[in-house]
Length: 181
Image 1 (tube, rainbow, N blue to C red):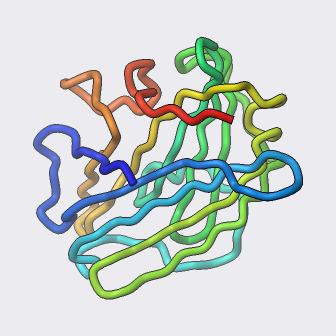
Image 2 (image 1 turned 90 degrees about the horizontal axis):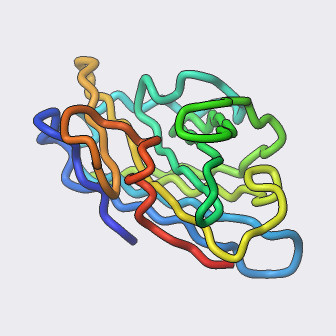
Image 3 (image 1 turned 180 degrees about the horizontal axis):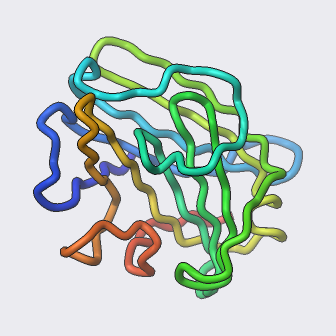
């Protein structure tokens, strides 16, 4: 799995690494995606939402959550998905860079969270059609995470940070991973 990089000076010493991937789910049926995130570090120092009811919730990025962004190769529009350790989720469609945001309500991801000493893992399975309509041959992907410490300090993690001044997971230069259907 690709490893996410921390943005700037807000790096928390309690996070050793975050690995993330987005892949196709093999098998019959409509196209689906599997998002996988693994955070390694001192979990006792992190504000990790307790598992609860799997439901849609806005503002997940204000606390510990994992995210991915998906756009058909060469398109301006993209989808954003937020997945929290609480099993809450949110999804949005954008017509272009931070423009035309609309909620996507019909994805109902299956989210599994496991915690072991020193590691938090989240795996979610989502239907592609709800995120991207008809499948494209190739998708550009941005993978990211927001991690909250117990004191409320946030750190931002992504495959790429094109803006050195501030974290911006929506930035077109963040879409550095590719998956092919």
